[in-house]
Length: 71
Image (cartoon, rainbow, N blue to C red; front, side):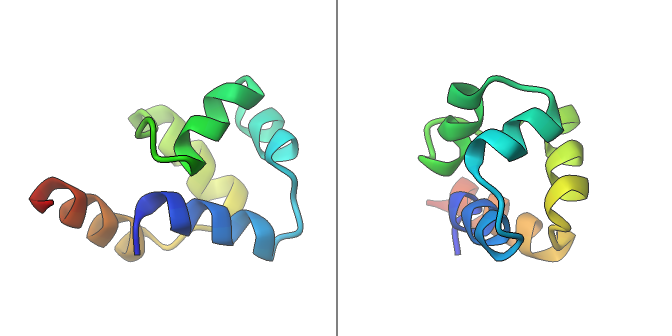
């Protein structure tokens, strides 16, 4: 699974809109949308905020990032 899918699925599972996640993380909506559309990878600081806001699994994120490096 790609990072964009992990982020999107976690957001939907929590019943949040993209705007709500962006506000929780402290970024603009269009900046957040880049993560779900795979146009950008979050910085370390933003990734930590996403992990907390969406209760993301670190192992899943690590696997997604590794597979994107090997692609």
